[in-house]
Amino acid sequence: MTDDLPQPRPDLPAAAETEIAALVNRAAKAHGPVIKALNAVGGSLESRSGALPDRIRGVLDAGISGLLEGAYRTAGAVGSMPKLPPARDWTHRAAAAAGGAMGGLGGIGTALVELPATITLIFGAMQRAAAQEGFDPASEEVRLLCLDIFGAGGPGRADDGVNTAFLGTRLSVNGVTLQALIQRVAPGVAAVLGRKLAGQAVPVLGAAAGAGINYAYMSYYEEMARVRFALKRLAEAHGEEVVLAAWRERALPLAQR
Image (cartoon, rainbow, N blue to C red):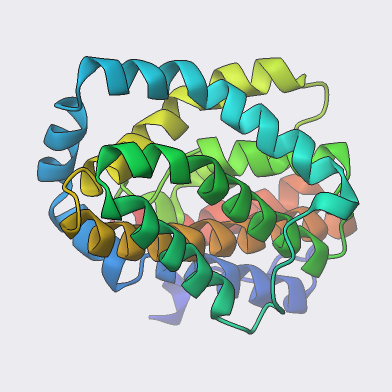
């Protein structure tokens, strides 16, 4: 049986191999109970998202680029960065849940009003994950990577926890401009947020859905950012190709289950 396990690489320290294995497991576990529940009813949510009024769908599709750019620029001003509690404190996730509940109280109208705050809060959580791995959270590269993480998938996809396309091919965004990146990621972000709005569409009942979705989304994106920036740190220390090869070798079997 041990012959089937990934073997240590001579050009990658055993400690790095162990950390990569832990990161693969961390990414897979990012799908908590609420995320699994969202996946289980994904067809229903997708149907409701597609059934959003054309006016609301148009507002979402047209406005998402502006929301992403706004979050990016706000995150660059250190003084205005979201003040999040320490990493081991769960209260920031509770704050996201409270915002989702408030957004869902009045149905789709209040959910749209709440959307920019949720995006900014999640973006700030990803910046904090970067800081924990030794990167400057306000730097242009980190903020671009946060956008890339936000748009490279989402908690509605069943394989995102170990999706090699998500974490295994883009550890940097060198040479990518802000507008080009936003154009690339905006459709995926709009799809994820469309599911969120669909869940909040019914007044009062939408409050409970909004709280659960916001909590789950905050947890998901923060965890995936921790994985992404940890891999980036390892890549800078040991070389990108060898780190990505080790990631793919361990992540692929999980993705195929």
